[in-house]
Length: 114
Image (cartoon, rainbow, N blue to C red; front, side, top):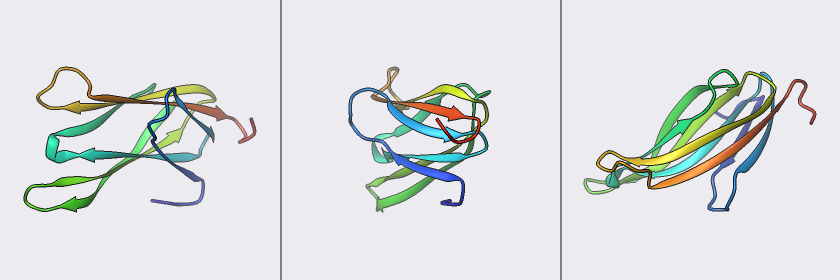
């Protein structure tokens, strides 16, 4: 999934939104950890006119009969110039509210220069 015209980013526990620079036509990836043993699943919310989800993969890192956790990789393509926000909420199937939240601000330029 790592190709020309693509940037990769991992989430952190830093307060505030993480800022990512992109350009129209470029893709970027975001990596988030999930513990599927607990029923965790990251759910993104974003403006589908400005950004497009082009890939969503889960790589199981540790697993056996009792444990299933790994890295979830989301690949987005930048479609429109401007500032776009992606909000990921860590959801549990049995819980009505989000367990955690990650916010990314995506600054998209027309020519790749801020």
